Length: 326
Image 1 (cartoon, rainbow, N blue to C red):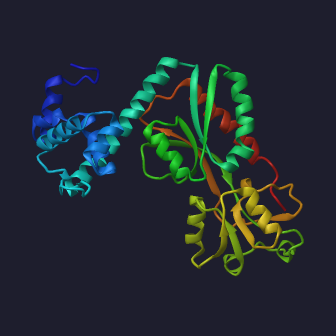
Image 2 (image 1 turned 90 degrees about the horizontal axis):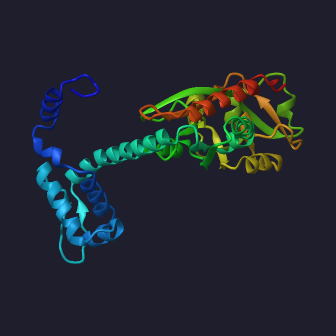
Image 3 (image 1 turned 135 degrees about the vertical axis):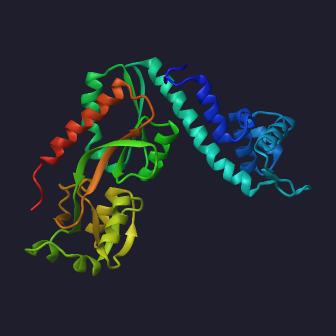
């Protein structure tokens, strides 16, 4: 009997029924790592160098893996031609990547458990969060948890940050909803409305009614490169939108609007409302960007990680109470 309350014999029978044979129980993580390295490097020698093994050790690990799974995994053309993965090798490697990610996540879990309320909390952010939300979250959190070191990783692409959470390289990340597929849990933090950013004095800002999708389709637009919510808006528009420039640098976007390059269709949080060279027009019929905090659902969350999320919730609740644009 083990911690699940299920007899060990039943688990062994279950594993055997899934795998078809006990021989699969001989597969080790080092076999998968060798397969990935050979596929990536195109040679046994380079794979051995990358992993710190001898070439013969890599060859033995691949041979053992092929014998266990009953398939040829490597194409060996001979001569100077690079080796490559067979179809079976590529298929197996997809599963190996997931296994390696779970092992990395397990290692991160044990480290977090051992450190308790101290240690390092690794958080993913993107630019608008870093400018408008993160500073106040950090001020409050560090005052309450002075023994915790917060290590920040920034990316314009939240899908990249979600991948780091899945692999155990981040404990938490800000991200847009809906999430990409993965082992994630999340809590919504903030509804960030989309705005149309126009040059100061633009006739569009003098209109009584908000611009419609038809109006937006007639404009030269500037948008972000990696904003997944913007991609959803383009689908919602049901008509082509003409983007003349895309940048994930918020100040660049606002400056280009001020210079007359185009109008920006962006979340309000990404823009500086105090910039007198531009005006922000609310778009009440456009779906807002939903910002969330995300973590790995199967990983242990430290008290510090939970406290960081709760602090972010409090800060974002106050931001949503700020008056809207007129």
